[in-house]
Amino acid sequence: MPKRDWITKDLTWKLFSLILAVGLWITIHNLRDTPEVAVDPFATVRAVTFTNLPVLAVSANADVHSAQVVPNVVTVKLSGSSDAIADLQSNKVHAIVNLTGIDTASGSRMPVDVSAPPGVALDTVDPPKVSVTISPPTE
View 1 (cartoon, rainbow, N blue to C red):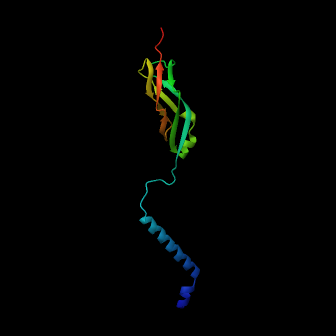
View 2: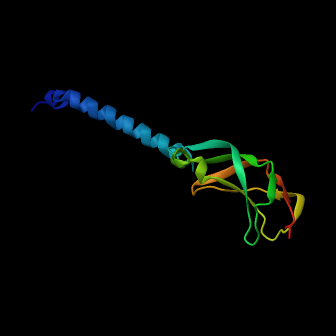
View 3: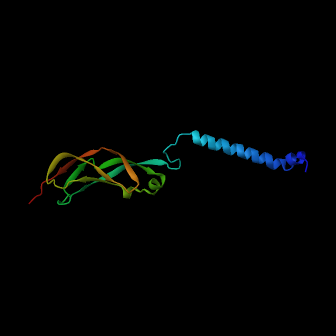
């Protein structure tokens, strides 16, 4: 087999292999020089806002039927992964004012607690506090 045949035989496959090897080398070389980023490129965070979410008064030891909450609705902004936000429904988010240990109140400012499903984070509550008035029990 002459030397010329050794170089020219299957020349297209040899050129293809050389181009592939150079491309692979450039890719690996660039990846090594790029600093690592701790961000998952496939994870996307989305936000959703619920307006006019009713505020519920709860208490462990008292009747809350006489409690008046002003304002009685809040705006809640939640964030989470695309899957968690896509499955989120307004009936799974609750705005609560805890009145445990309070018998009577007149215009007390109480914080609004928001419960949301796992994988969903609370961003903001507007307003963060509401006025609560509890009438004394009539006998």
